[in-house]
Length: 592
Image 1 (cartoon, rainbow, N blue to C red):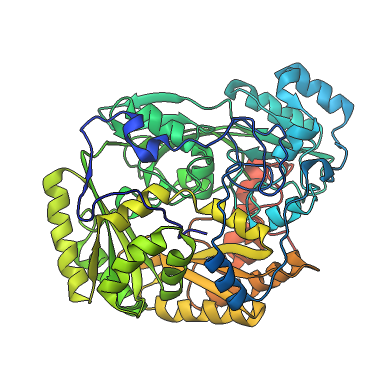
Image 2: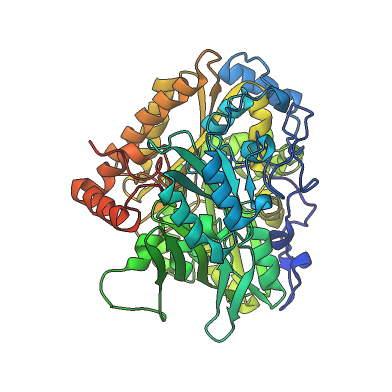
């Protein structure tokens, strides 16, 4: 879920303080490293520990040992809304069913000769740690003890070894899944479908984890593709810079994963999506290395850089990315507002995007619908007693819609932009809630997936989906998505928010909660997902706004890019990856 918050004790109306060159330790965004021991694989409800990737998520959930307890009132409300559920803790790790590695002995020998034995792992722990991403379908299978999607081996190459590794994989008919943080929620790193290849390996990029260069004149930085979010911010903060890219997967996701999936961070309204920040990439493909991007802009033919960005590991392995960075803002102001209803809130957001324009709208703009507003107070612990009282005192018993706005920059610029936004929000019936709500969201914004682990333990289906549409289509699309999910799942909670603004429209992010079908949980969500995806496309929404295509959306890609578009993408793949070893299960649907 994406709506969880937690209080931090900030005084209402007091903007955050920062210095011109704070260290990483002074920035909560930069220092939120995963809690717990680096090699902990403890999953919610299991009490087990198994080696996992250093610093990676739990094998069967999110942050090891961090799933919060549900309050008694929250459990009662969920039972009333969704029906009775039975607790469904994850199986112990010792009971996970892992098929024997299918990697031929000769292939393993050749890979060991290239990389060294310590970088070619076929043991149970390494394979289980790379057995999928963090979608509901990935997790429900793993928690039930099904690790059939695990790779046959896990490779950890250095950058200068990648071309030889891919050549060996081509020669031995071994499929390759590039693996960054393992946070895909659309089946983007699953080994479940091998495309007919003899074996499949996960290519763990954790050794490509350094800041390669920082150009302070151009304000760009080059990163290894395996560098995780907190390490990116820590390395930049040491020199007084920030990337400003904070997806909710920030603690575990990587630069390469962001670029490969066209990620959008929580502050992308102000800082820009990752595809807006990319200046250059290096990508090793089975047929050679692509070195793309030169200067601030180019008219040298079609944008080949744009082909690599969003390629989801289907063309090759991203090894480096050069991204735009900024000086750490000396001043930040985050606060909450209440809007009367979703339509008034959307009208306010449209005016912020169109009237104020680029650079003046808030850097963070998040608007929850009424149901997500209620659930925020229900599921967020002490926030429900402290902030809910102030919220209801401002709005009355009608919940309205909670909004979070954030501004970052020079103090006078933040003050000017805040005043301009305040006029717009008040004109649309907005009521200010002060800095406590904004700071609560800011400090708890990466913890929500831990709540999902708790809800999975309590027998719920918990999944997310997202899209984007023009402002005129958003109200009806919101209603159609809700209706589709109710038709498919029956008793369901559908919680929605807008989190990324454009001049023409905005994103729509949806969290779904329902009682899990114990007999067929995979079929239950697969049918609902197909129906709601068809609804989104029919209603003018994009197939995906920032989660990428992966395996979950690939059968629908033609509806967005057309038959000719699919043919073009297949031609590019055939050129870069003629034997089809690169991530065969994602992006492109099977040719008919």
